[in-house]
Amino acid sequence: MKIGVVGATGRMGRMLIRQIHETDGCELVGAVDRPSAAELGQDVGGLAGIGPLGVKLGDDSAALFAVAQVVIDFTVPAATVAHAQLAADHGCSLVVGTTGLAAEHQAELDRAAHRIALVQAPNMSAGIVLLTALAEQVARTLGPDYDIEVLEMHHRHKIDAPSGTALALGAAAAKGRAIDLAASAVRARDGHTGARPRGAIGFATLRGGDVVGDHSVIFAGEGERLELTHKAQSRVIYAAGAVRAARWTAGKRPGRYTMRDVLGV
Image (cartoon, rainbow, N blue to C red; front, side, top):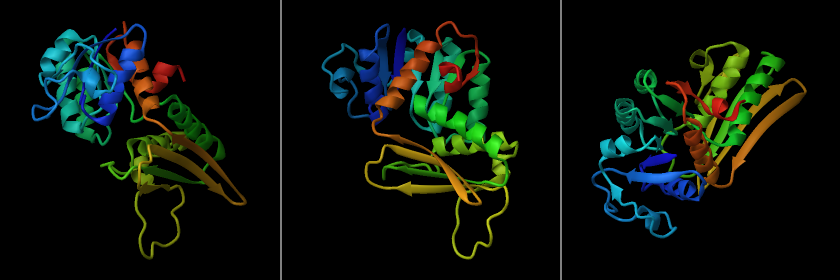
């Protein structure tokens, strides 16, 4: 599988390079970053800490999409939209782990997915995929007598809040309840807020240190509380999931896919 990486100098980009190199049946055919990146022209194997791979860091995204079968994108929303268009133009599958995508960004991904296989997930770990499925099932089973709160914590450098994974967990719980997340989400509480609205799905965000990613979905009822929790100890799980998704796209028809499709959940 010929795989390319965009945003190659970031933490996830470097980890993806290592993961692709270490995965049987995968070949890293290119890696790019923004034109202002100081590392341009360097061997990406050295950037990833695994020694020379014979692949130089470039800034020509179009050239990368022209030679790759699938590209993995952990960048920022505006860049991801541009990459989706390039992927569609070149018939290259795309795996998107970018978070913070707004409705207009998602619409652009929808358009690209009419022409290519596009896997998108805010979190590529197998454990989070299962947690999301469980959150939906538990929300459906317990019903509205149980209040739902989503708690997440990440490192101090994370730029979006709540995390994409937290929002996905809230969306899964909302689906289980057959309610609209946008109408029921409570993202902040401060001051005299009054009683908790029935049916609300609350979000709490913590930031600090080097926490890779902790997520909990709490179902609080009268007399008992059920907590579903996932704690990521290494970003390797995200890279491994993304590469698994990339390999899964081989031979897939155009369309929007998730990690549930990849894992068969």
